[in-house]
Length: 441
Ligand code: UGA
Image (cartoon, rainbow, N blue to C red; front, side, top):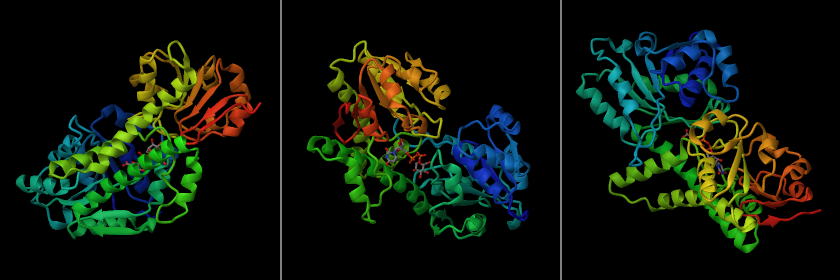
């Protein structure tokens, strides 16, 4: 890649920040990565990647000489005009997004009004923020004599677990700006990816992000409700989703029924959009249902287990997978958190295993046995629940599993297992929205 690319700063080295930094370094920019967490910066400096994300370590290593790590925002200000902001915006108790980290960045930038037009900086917002945040930040900047600072909204759409691939192949790049140099510079930066660019105003760009996540979450809750109806009617939700998805107005993606969505984004952003609407006097009814369906979906596992086992008291239940989805160690809002707590409350003994997320999970899940592998988790289990569809669970030898279990119930929370193979091993398979398949032996 060429060495004449614009240098950039990236504030925040979480999933979004680090992938953005590595991605732009890969495209040829020098990238100045800033984080207030000195320990994290030291680890990155030493070549350690603090998160599990396929392909990220390789991309960072391959572009190491263009990646600079520091805790001092002045390093980014000195070398780069575009400062991508990728700090966390976690939910507050009210469900609104907590913007304190975003405003801390705004505060940390000194007033540089004396600088010439060519030396001025821009904040490029990657963090997911409520629509209207850009306008509020611009008011704050004006109040602090920092009018020289431009503002661009450039929301991120990458998915954890495929973040590097998503960065390099975006469906679209959304750039919301005031029509000044900064918007053009961001569009130029993305040019090598040859993506469709949506150039719009700041508030609309902010809303594209929230609306996209809320729509995808709605799609999941919708198919989960269809799955629940399928269970009552004898239909198979996989067949139903396939038939629906072939209509290209609907599409196949995000129609996988399961035990609910988790992660750092959907639960938070659906709530944030609901609150944003509520704060401006609009009651967004649909999103209430999306959230409620998702919560109930996690708990349906318990009623399914009760149906098979009668009572959960003293029963061994194995949870395969803990992360909110495969290929990540992220435990935020994972269905496993609700499940492990509910199972224990109902008297079950819970054995869990996740190939990558165990360390994260140990901070959040108490009272369970952390198994050394899938087969260790399954040992003497009365029921096995697939919580996260990691590849190694899908390829399990079900005859081996059957020989180790005390009971026969396999609950496929992601509709990811080969149900014929499970039943052929003498086990009872139940998925989500597709009925039960009992022992074929
Ligand atoms: C989501 C969006 O997909 C990204 O576009 C967005 O950039 C990101 O949030 C964000 O705002 O940062 P992510 O949370 O990484 O990405 O993960 P997804 O792959 O979207 O999955 C979210 C949850 O939905 C997972 O728990 C997954 O198991 C569940 N899901 C997904 C289903 O239950 N069914 C589906 O059909 C798809």
